[in-house]
Image (cartoon, rainbow, N blue to C red; front, side):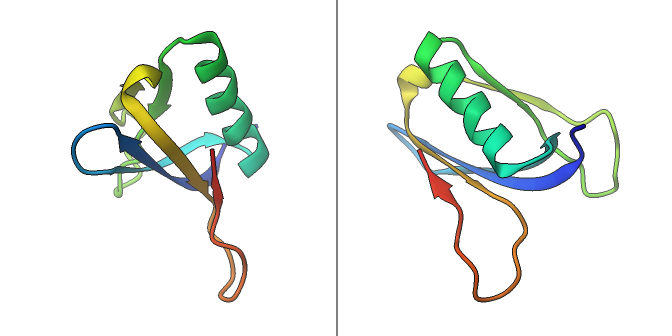
Length: 87
């Protein structure tokens, strides 16, 4: 069941990286799998932004894989642990 807070960095081919906090995934592996599947099919990757106030009606972001160099997924981790996974 989705509900863990993850930070996703989207690095476009042009422009500045975009950072999104989301509750869409239940594990880092599930987030990476969703990105990988979307990019393998060439379909937009969809992610809902978590609002700071806990507003469930957050913004949905659609990412075109043709315009992205990399996506990084990170779950909240204790200090001194790894820094997330790049795709």
